[in-house]
Image (tube, rainbow, N blue to C red; front, side, top):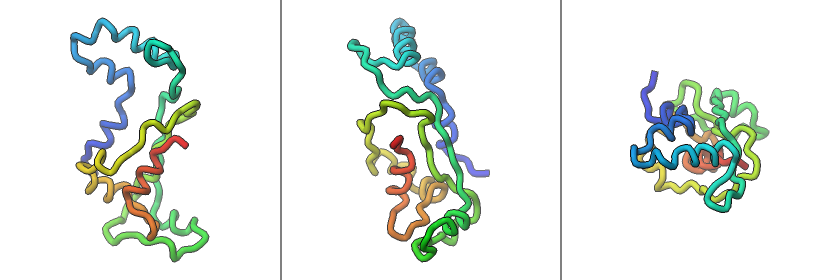
Length: 138
């Protein structure tokens, strides 16, 4: 079994994250929770992304390659011999914007783990490109 920072990171719910705030933020915590609960943000209370769950999917490398129309597009690295991450998608994401882009510098510290557990099997795409697209909510 692999140990990683990824599972705890993905398993924290927004409710738990509110509990992790500093004590001096407690006064506004209830207001933030109401905004989250009803899909509002800021003082103008415009709706924002309403998803509350993330769909985590795995893939079997050989099955992924067989699903492609052209098998020659696929390359499974020798080090991969187990299930890998296929994607993370917000469940029932509605009215989400693309204002949260993912940059390579954002995940640079995790690059080795992502390459191992979230690789791209497409010869034409890097692992970073694959994981950044599979975490989009489009």
